[in-house]
Length: 359
Image (cartoon, rainbow, N blue to C red; front, side):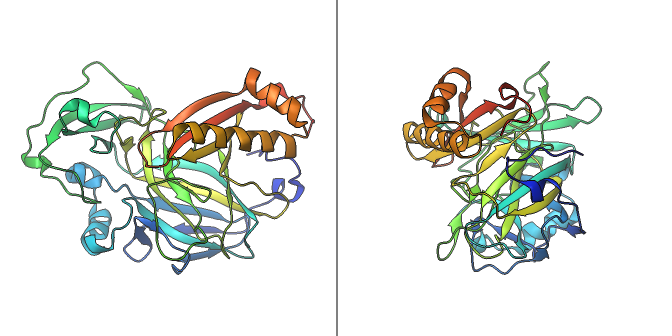
């Protein structure tokens, strides 16, 4: 597989895998709801290594008969609810990258994402954007994946009785009133990680819910197989973790969740010391994508704009005047999500508009 990475990456563009690691999700390799720079790594890798990781959804309890096996159930039964805080996402890791230091970048090349089960869950949650419009009701829709067509359709839905307020809640779905939903509708399956990132350089636990410079809960469905993410390293080793796996999501994630479903994820980690960037940077075959975050969507928009301006100036060698003009005529700004406390905007710049070989 050929890689096209950020200009100036002569060493990185020729990085070859030196080892393949398997990181299974177990109570010993998972942490629930937080990043923490003091958390001991569960795996140590060299730059260029491949890692196969099990990413388990924190919504498996919405349909435990369809979305859990013995290993997933063991994680849910073993990690106490008191240790699932301050966020909600079940994370696998952290992974320590040798020689990674603050100021470096981790280039994570996502190579493959395979659903662990044929089912996933979407929750219209109390943190959803239109929660009050539905009478403050929470509803679960279970989707079934058809692997032969790579499409998903609603399997059934049910109204959750009460407040869905416990990370990893196991509902009474076997006894609930199951309803048909979305007859004749099928949605494309696009597996991706909703949450992944490095440990921030702050003491104690940092919630997995809001995104930030470390990555975290970005919820951009383009962070899937074939994409490359660049995460700014804040602490020695980076301490990279993955979680919140999805099999489909729209921009905005308006109900509060995607189709939440466990994934087996293969990626390559490359340590980059030849460039830096202040926020998570995404490269796909067709776009460079920069993210901005803030509690105020207008400020998130401005942050994304400023970082794309920096990217075009520093990495594409444009003057700031030229970059500003190009952003207005060619970049697409999109709301990534509005449900994670710190809201997100991402801006896509098409790679095809630059002449081949131009920095």
